[in-house]
Amino acid sequence: MELLMLIVIAVLFGVGTYLLLSRSLLKVVASLMLLSHGVHLLILTMSGLREGAPPLLDESGTGATDPLPQALILTAIVISFGLTAFLIVLAYRTYKAHDTEDLEQLRGEPNE
Image (cartoon, rainbow, N blue to C red; front, side, top):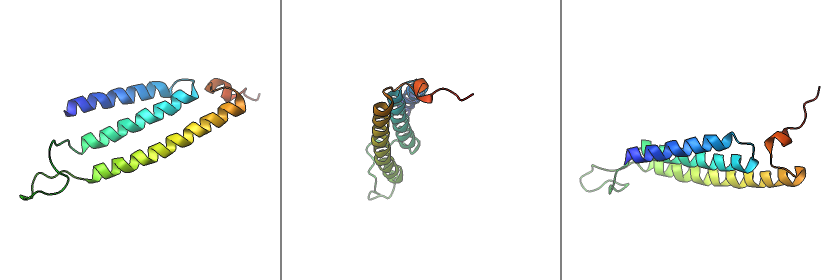
């Protein structure tokens, strides 16, 4: 199960890095979303995947999973959702002001 999760994480990081290097502003926002989802899965995978184990201790006192990574991931999901909403609004306002989403055109001409 961990190997499958690591492959998914690698694909998310790879696609996110590829989109981050593109010239479109919306692709950059989408790449940040993919990278944040990859980090969420990485934290969950590194904390250890146990199937069927409750997050609290059972009667014997063994076999419990740590609830801290799950709480961190939930907090990170909320933060990344807020950041994504802010970046989408910022990209929309930039498009309205400059009539382009191309990052090369937004850079402008260098002053010589």
